[in-house]
Length: 320
Ligand code: SF4
Ligand code: SF4
Image (cartoon, helix red, strand yellow):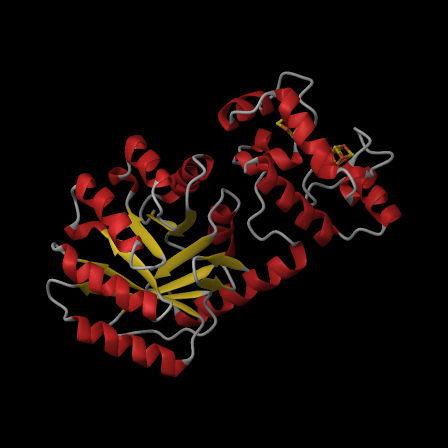
């Protein structure tokens, strides 16, 4: 479902557990083993964990590490890369942003798929911009304890159009995960979650994706959605939040119209007789009830899932 570096993550749930007491959750899209402080833990222990994981045959997996010195982290990156495993860098021993920004390219040169786990209070706008320019594959936002503010942080990171976003949060129910996904999280991670709940949630989201066609589809721009929501916008002919979103995306209204029309050309989105603007390319999200759009879809034999898959591609094209 999500390809990032050499990882194939087949559902948007990541389970984080201590490497001392691992939970080998085979339903999660990503299993992350935590607690490799390489000032304390020898690399041999990391190697042993990797061997156990590969014997268990789980899906995508990763290791979270930190260290006050660069060399052990570079060794860990080489090890992770050889085992096609994510290296999730933790900031606890890397507080200096200058060291961090120098370290990222060094680690990436080892061929590793790299994520950085960071708290919002450590992520200034300037640092976010630099990280977006770096080769970092995943920004892993640690949103625990933020309650309602978590989705806003995800939206801010998404709209800055940087790496894949993984959001670590307190997830107690399906809606908690969905609230982060609709704001642009590609993966939701959980630490200390009940294994049965994590298993159920992984399965539920996988099923939701296969039915909906776009598991982390955004809200409409006027409902507070991130920039991907431009895929559901009408032509910019009136004064509404689309104008602010286009400004943020660095696109003029004319460019937006042209981009949408050229994407739609030759695809089923070009059709849409009887809809507000005569083409499905301007139509709303499938979850918004509309008999006009649904009649147009039925006429051309396009399922709701296929419609949303096309809207996902359209959002990628608009923001590319
Ligand atoms: S263009 Fe339509 S969907 Fe987009 S923000 Fe304006 S009213 Fe909402
Ligand atoms: S026809 Fe329905 S789905 Fe399409 S733009 Fe109008 S209200 Fe939205």
